[in-house]
Image 1 (cartoon, rainbow, N blue to C red):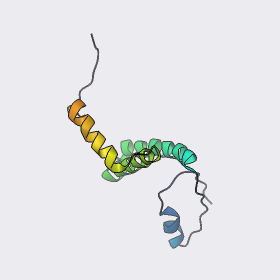
Image 2 (image 1 turned 180 degrees about the vertical axis):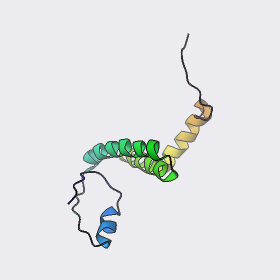
Image 3 (image 1 turned 60 degrees about the vertical axis):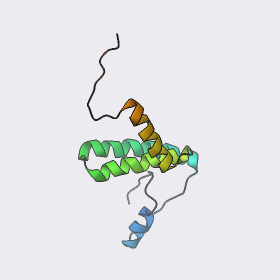
Image 4 (image 1 turned 90 degrees about the horizontal axis):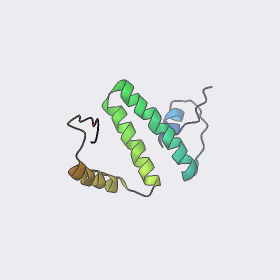
Length: 102
């Protein structure tokens, strides 16, 4: 038996059980889910740093979308706001590191 106590994607319990393995899970309220989501964001971010692949980048995005949803924002609102901010402030394509403001 392996114990996890971590947030998983919605279909994971069914995927586990379809393979013939039993699992225990619970559904938590939004307040508790946010704490689990913060942990998941740290986990997925570290996996992206370690693995550097598109699946891990997608996992980070999925967690960010879930957190934003708990705050009351849709994916569409988040992406639209991202574009607005990027058009004004820019992105991170130029690798600029600010050293000092004089």
